[in-house]
Image 1 (spheres, one colour):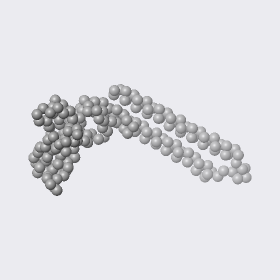
Image 2: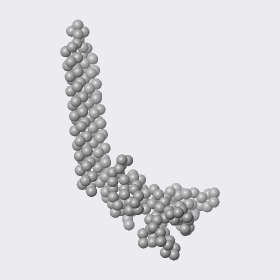
Image 3: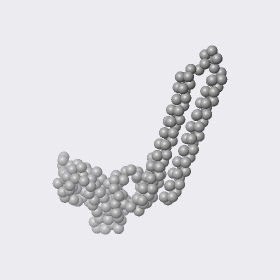
Image 4: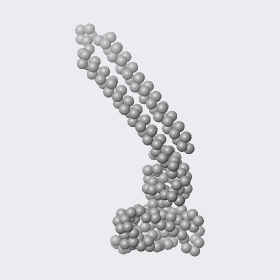
Length: 217
């Protein structure tokens, strides 16, 4: 997979470079032809001013310079995309945290994560089934500011494949919702219209730049 990504990106870069070079050569050729034609048909009593010719030549040089800059930026963008694709490929088989509030249960256990903007004296978790019905509530006690992880298992051997969770701090009017993350495993890396995307074991996809953390199993 890595070779395929590399080859496709390299081919794209080479094609872009050739197209840019051809476009630049064509622009300069058209300019020279127009300039020669203009000089051949000029009024002998009112010849072209040297300053005017110099100005026109400076303009074509400016255009050529912009085209070269655009070609360089295109090459840099392709190289960055290639490096990003190679880096993303190393995530295959790894667990990642992406924005979300779902837990996929494996062997009767699910794992989730959340982030607190401030320390909290009381952190509470509410778990709901696919229909949105609350099936469990529990407290994690007092926690410091930052990211935290937890695991959960349904009571009584309830057969669930996936649940959602909500994390709150405090109680009553002082309660606030924490930022939650879904923990999932990367199955593949694909290139989409909006950039690199990760195919996850749960069947979902996530943007590569949305990954908040990479974890061990």
